[in-house]
Figure 1: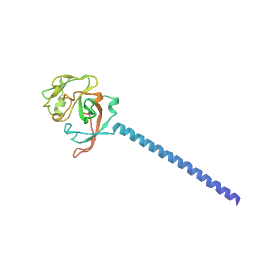
Figure 2: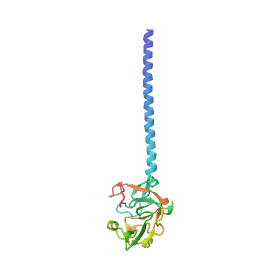
Figure 3: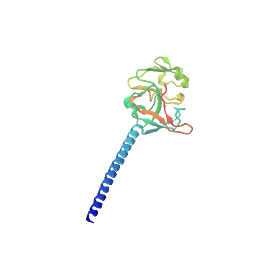
Figure 4: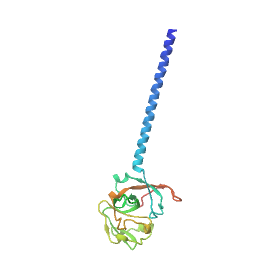
Length: 201
């Protein structure tokens, strides 16, 4: 009788020890997975979490008035905007202003001018630009040649005749410190589907 109790006691103790070890490993596994998920969520929100709305019809037909876009804030911490990128910026870094969403048409070191409604870069007519967009009725400050300095970008709206952009004296060339990030994804609005925002040459 004494031996049987001892054997049962040892057997029960052994089972409890095995169960506890497995439970602890499972708890730590769930803690690890949860911590990793939280870390990924924080990184994602830091990089892509900014959501801004398009104001006006200056980027139609790609973006409509009120349509939301997600902004990649990390993109230009590593690389500079390229021609054709759609960027989000605050004019003159004014945090009280609404966000502007425009397309980069010229980069630092290039010369920009608008002649008879057409875009010229370094003295060359941008024929592809003419085929994609309407001729500009308002040449603004770009009626005279503008030389872009270091960290300066010339931007235009896709709907050229309904856009306040680098042609406007109160905006002018967009400097690096004005840029918030790269517009990379548009959220569905009416008939305009959601999707990635691609760069145009």
